[in-house]
Amino acid sequence: MDEILTMVNIALGNGQILDCEAADSNHNGQVTVDEILAGVYHVLTGCPTPAIPTYSISGTIRYAGSGLPVPGVVVDLTGTTTLSVETGADGHFAFFPVGQGNWQIQPRKTGDLGDSIDIVDAVLVLRSTVGSITLTAQQQLAADVSGDGSVDINDAVVILRYTVGAITHFPTAELCGSEWIFIPAPMAAPSQSVTEPLISGGICQPGSISFDPLSAEATSQDFEAILIGDCALDWSGVGLPAAAVGGLGEN
Image (cartoon, rainbow, N blue to C red; front, side, top):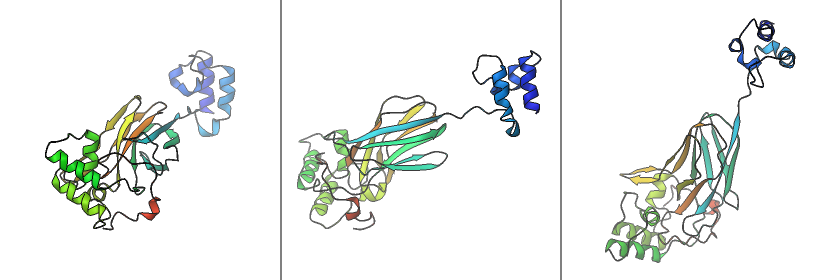
């Protein structure tokens, strides 16, 4: 009952809103009879507690080369707990409700390689090493299949070994725990920061989007996907089911 008496005193002018801020549910600087009556229902649990706001986080993942949606991507949302969803056929993902706090979005995907990786990709890497072409930043991420942070003739050899079946997974995929790389491309949101994917010195830093803290709706938190080894960026969107590809530890 102490909380109710506090609310009555505030309403009579014998107390201040600061004595029980939650009593002023409509935030007009006063405590009304209706608010006092509402407080009676909360008497057993103490002074009324403001509702904790929740938000939604959503986005779409599309392929860097074609803009095609990428299904079957596992998207992890890590914060006070870890939540995971999978993109649908339209490449869309969504989390709701998500409470306030620090959160990080990080995608990962195994499989659905299809026949996108072939000798053409090895040739592109070779041409870049002799300076006849310049790879884009996206192509460089795809081409560094050895995971050493650079694109050189060794990457072309590794791709050729893959095309003839000598290996079934690239060292970079082993390193990252994902056969795909994801580049953040989000719409701006409050307290948002992005981490670009980086492979260097035997370390894989996945691409991610963070909120420190999440304090508003976060839509269009998109990513561009790159299939490791697909230097031509010509993934067609028609691939094998992820279960048919096997685990990353096989080679």
